[in-house]
Image (cartoon, rainbow, N blue to C red; front, side, top):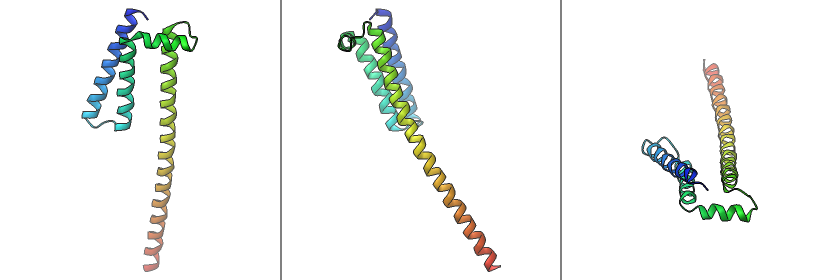
Length: 118
């Protein structure tokens, strides 16, 4: 891993951590999401400080370039995050649909009750 890449990774790690800490202070992000991003920035920092870890992982997976391993690793991690977010959004949409349906039924019952009383 080149020195330039290591410097970029350290900077990216600190920027990510700083942005997440700022969002946490403003209560703009859920704790679960912030733990993921802080953890990812920590992994980036560790890999940039100790490139032997990435080299060993790349060699174990028979990937010739460490940078290719890093790209593959981070793409995989972000795809997993995207999948979990998609599941979460799907669950929220189901809850929203259910709430809207219950609200509509309640409004219809109230309307029918006022018509009977009138």
